Image 1: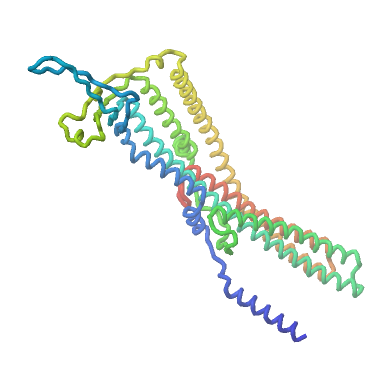
Image 2: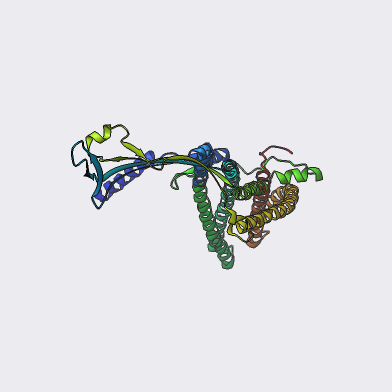
Length: 454
């Protein structure tokens, strides 16, 4: 017995120390969540890394004017011995004789060449790197805005589900209390057994609902942590409440086109169109003649293993070194049906597809914009009615409980009143979430800010 008591005390001490060492939960607001996501979200870091590549290409775009430089050294040996026979004269007979000299088979050859092709396509390529960098910045900005919208949406959904869990917990506690009261009344003979069993069934049926909501809440929280790039085991507390986002938009026929042009998806397609237009022009420029500047040197040294050869005057011989200016024109690319011709036509068709897609997206965006505004107006009008409905349902529950305790209403009637109250509260929460999500979709698709009126 003493050993068991000691074990229990040690266990409690360890648990107490663990509780003391555990860090307090981290409180986080929606604005703090957005800031963390901008700093730590992995997808955003991937997009930023892509921009680093595009930025480097843009910053060093002028390296196209650096000529192609090649240097080489070759040490060679002839397979057969080479000889030179020459005539030698003398003042005494025989007056002319021959002399044979063996040539060193080893030769050291050096080569250096520089080549610089110049064309209109070269300048068009520099322009393309700038366009790609600008498009990358737009893509990164769109990813930032989308991330901010998703964080705010998910934050509100978590707050809503936490509120729903609290409502279900209250309902479960009420069902438990009512069952205990009914069971006590049944054992005292004041209530029929079926009424006590009905109270037990209502209590048990609420448990799976609460468990399902708790699991959904944990899943949302894990997705939220992954979105923010924080550890999944970090304990965080969500600080805030569900309130309507401050935003108003005065839409007129004149402002509709301006709003459509500043939608992020429309701007993204427009950027792709500009890039493809430049690519097509780049392909066409590549069909024009190229001006090629070339300079080469190829000095060679005979008898490289003879130390005297290195110091001899005119020991290095130049065979084919030169400076040249040439004009090159790939004429087969001008023939209809050639590979270059087909590529240009395919790119032009892709450009036309993009332009048609842009027109289609603008039409769909106009419908989406008007639909969003109608839904926002509907949600705002229904919120007041739903809040009044919740107040009425709370009053009905209070009166039903009083009537039940006085024996004027059955348990089923009380349970129905509580279900109606829970339904009214959840409907109010869902309506707030729907309103906020619609406003967030609207302001981020148009690149507005919260509280910014248009």
